[in-house]
Length: 215
Image (cartoon, rainbow, N blue to C red; front, side):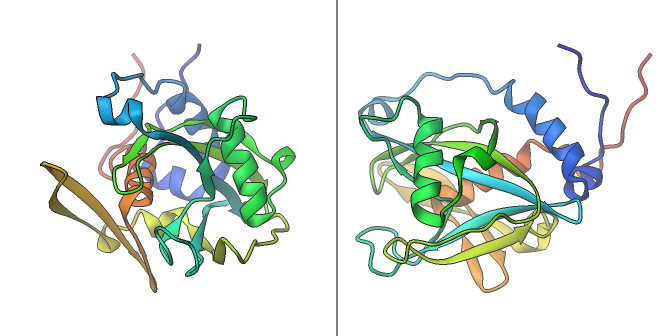
């Protein structure tokens, strides 16, 4: 497969078409890894990280979970949930859950690929995030109030601002774990969703990187 030429980070943060082409290539390179025993025993889940453009600028859709949910109430998340027996894949799980939670029509989503899975030990889920492209403009959404309190629309460039990001080392479940935090306006994105967002942003070239010339 022909490699796309190097692209600067700032271009990808502000040009949705360039970002989508970049992610198609990078997500196809995501390597498989050996799962731990807790990961193999956990319940499988899929979430959708939906990207869309406003005036060509890439944005991500998050949800704020309902305060009535039994777990992770009020937290910021991507739409998603547990795999059901009828789901033929975790990609289908992510699309089904996004339709149930925010009314996103699966036909409007181009799946670009999967980010590395995340093990959420607290809820015992092994979560595979799917990156989806919705095109220019926010599609019509209808939230399910039993699961979603609010839809949050975030420019990718704002999420990539180093000023809103920090990490902490937490000691839980017999080991030390890096926890990623993003202070996006009044919202705190952390936990499994923070790890997924960090994974997505880590695919981009470093801020100091410049395109190199081919020989």
